[in-house]
Amino acid sequence: GVSQEASAAYARGATIVPLRRTGGASAGAMGFPAAALERPACATEAQWALLGASDTPVADTAAAVAAIVQQAAARRNRSVWELIDECIGMDRSTLTKVLGVVLLTLFLISGSLIYREVSRGRPELALVHGGFMALLVGLVASIAWVLAENARLETDKASGQVAGSKKDE
Image (cartoon, rainbow, N blue to C red):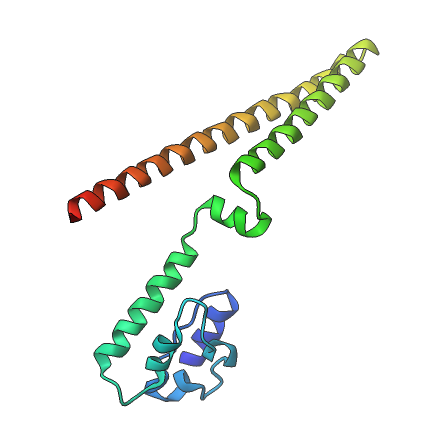
């Protein structure tokens, strides 16, 4: 039933929007997860109150549900950089510099290991280290592509917002 579905969704991290005004499981009965009855961050106090008020017009409750779901979706559909910012808390330029330093360090280590193995007469180990260096080159290329695509998408988004605001005028 509703309680089992809500429990499963809540366990997976979904935002639950219970229409408490309907009573039953959505109001907390029949094993509905108690934590799901707490106001999520994507809902204002007023919106959350509308979900439990049976004396308000259904249209007002529906508008509150739509606004809550829209806000929840906006929070869930974040870019990779927004997720990284949330987890790491540094700006993109600093992160790019840190990645550059780490990759440069790995290149230097790999290069010194290749040199060491060649000088010791072990070309098979030098090839293994060379393979690692080739993987690093691929990693650098993919990071550069992601950064370029992200910059392009942000430029497109910014120009779309500017164009949208001109149309509204």
